[in-house]
Image 1 (cartoon, rainbow, N blue to C red):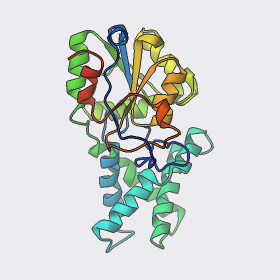
Image 2 (image 1 turned 135 degrees about the vertical axis):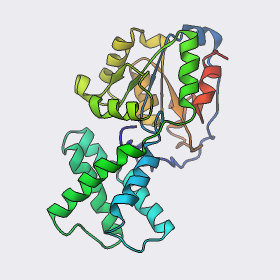
Image 3 (image 1 turned 180 degrees about the horizontal axis):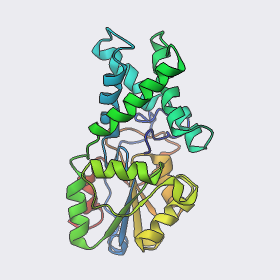
Length: 271
């Protein structure tokens, strides 16, 4: 996931409603597990709880624009921003708009839902500056991240991150979350391509020093992280923290699923 992970086409990111079976943890075949020498991971909603950080920052900096919202309304506001604006974020990934512009456009969509709008460009610029200052302070790593990294270190398995955002922004995010030990980080500025393009996965492999067939990729987006990784020759594993259900047409392309990173060592035959 980058700041807002794009969804499987025609699906709401985070729900993926459909008719397939729920997430299933499948141990890799022994010969396949033995071959695993590298692990690459997504960052947002995989390593760090970005949605939680975004929710808290959005409420902090938007309260004066929408006085009187109740808890349910604030939840709606945040979900529009984090899960209901995939099309806007895709415009950023396609380099049609800047990172700052996509944030403002998403905020405008949230405000419009409640019949409000920024009064001027100066007000939207002020909101953006406040949000950019607040959001990083709330970034935290998920509780299951450090135990996974400990297990990989103990097994001598190399690891790194590949993200659909720029390197320096994601580097600061990992460091703020206490994940400085993840030294390898590939952003979209490394090769001028974003997931699911094979080029960005291949750059991760190059920096990790492992071959595609001996590397797994773990992420929360079935299309970008699992199907995309498979297209680059890696084994994709879907981190399905919300126990979502995939569309029946997509499910066969996402064979390996876990609901938490604590399940990865067993899946790889490490425990």
